[in-house]
Amino acid sequence: MLAQYPFQLAPLPYDYIALVPHCDPDTLYVHYDKIYSQDLQTLNYLLTQYPTYQSWSLMQLITGKINLPTTVVNNIKYYAGSVYAHELFFCTLCGSPTPPSGRLAKQIDNSYGSLSNLQDIVKQAALNVLGAGWVWLIAEQDGSLHIIITQNYEIPRISNSVCIFALDVWEHAYFLPYPADISAYINNWFSVLDWNKAEKNYLKAIQSPSA
Ligand SMILES: [Fe+2]
Image 1 (cartoon, protein in one colour):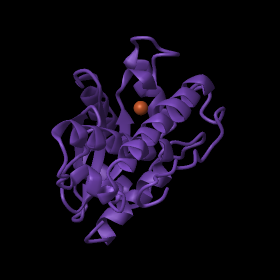
Image 2: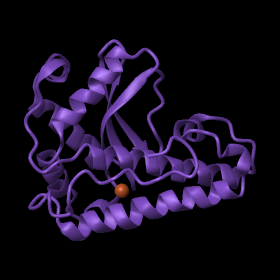
Image 3: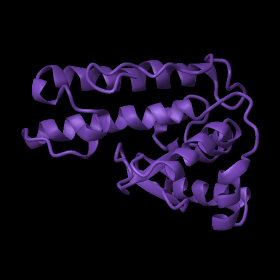
Image 4: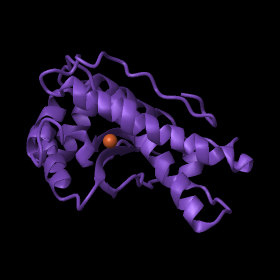
């Protein structure tokens, strides 16, 4: 996507049928082409009215001080957060994932004992999201991992950290195939989580002081 306004959709790196049977095409279509796309268009629309902020990056819009009325600031940060979170979400899924390996796999074992333990903690975190939110795995520059819960479209605020993956715990992510069955959704999400992409994100965290 472009680094600043007008923001553009991150291309979906697979077909709508690629995640079957773990994610059905209708859910993926609605989530990508409606929720994510419309939130991105709303962010661009908001910024058309405030040219001062059209040169800001997505992360600047999320974390920076915007000198506008509170309701406008809240809207800009809400939609910027949605764009950021959804881009990470869609770009860290794939139809045929392989188990984690390399530096990230070693750190997961060191931090959580096993991949299974990490998945259990992430799942419990997701089940404890009140309302809508996200569960993130983030890495600091020293390699340490953290599981973070955020509400709505809040983004983890740990400096010099990189988001490894993000689990969408909004009902729109799973209401078509699993009404009220978030547990099934989480289990299927684990089945399409792209650990190769997660490893690349982890290496970015430990190799770049300003990532
Ligand atoms: Fe979503």
